[in-house]
Image (cartoon, rainbow, N blue to C red; front, side):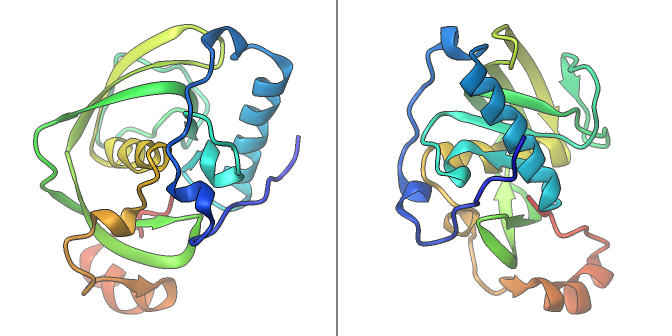
Length: 188
């Protein structure tokens, strides 16, 4: 397993639409190694999600999660999100993007900003075993999934911000925003 190089803001791979993976290839050695390396890279940089384009792979896949464990039919807003790899995901917003929250991105290091997102999503995808999965997610897990899903279409969290007034370096976020809002910074 390896720590992969993370593409940064300005690299064209972050603005390109990723291509679907053949579901038959999910269990191949190469895809399984990529999934493991993405999890290692996500943990190395203290992220909670990482999309394949962020590691220079233009495929529709991302990894997310905070803990090992099974994926059930619903991830609640206060639940620790189980670690999962989602291939060729279809994400449907439940409601309008009205929930404001802080986000960061491993491809835009040390920057945070407030982004509107839907409070819940429905997800259909293939998991790392090649099985189809379907679930709903609310709150923070829904925010992370929307953020990573955007990467697959070349969209960055900056593109979703309604205003740049909250755009902050992490140090200033910690100093001026986090203590007043009780937020964790929404790091990817």
